[in-house]
Length: 255
Image (cartoon, rainbow, N blue to C red; front, top):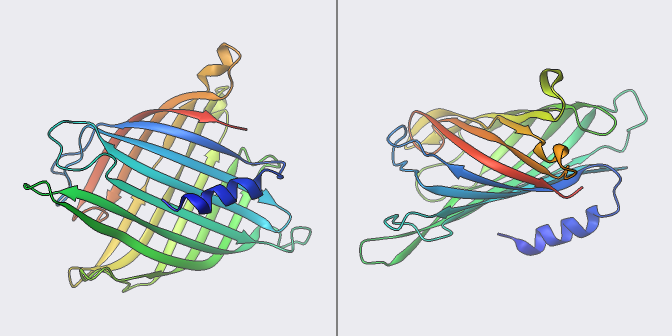
């Protein structure tokens, strides 16, 4: 999705000192019948993620691609792509307000599915523009980071009655190396909370994806290799109600 955008970002980020790019591969165990119209099982997800700071602020972006691997799955392979790109602007990094930035962001994606006659159909994953404030505390090398965002969120209606009702999103992002004093263990993730009018009813949407990674490659001189888990927690995100999707994965860092 938007391959040219990410190619350009990777080229621009090559001159930065800190930050990096990583590729994650997950197996999703699924969470059948825990949310309306959600029948996730036998799915694989790849995530390409990057984060780079510079003298004007920071750039963060990722793209998820979901693949169906079960022969009876009605979706195509791959069947969904979703991406986000956020830019924080901070021209006052030497001042007392150095931890506060202005953030602009775009979210959006698309999906495909087949009906019983094998005709292919598509659907959009709400495209949204966001702008607001970002307060970030971090170590000099960004290995430990705690980030709070308050953003105005404008969701483009997809024709299904889903659009902004309470146009504010609160986001908390964290990352901690050597978690619980365990060398090579990293705890990271995010929590998003926002409001949407879904099916004519005002709803609160919650999405969180805590991750726990262990740098297994440190034992055989391959520090780029990590193994770990991600737990996808959501409320009113892919359907009505609460959903839990446990995943296991591997991650390769390129920095």
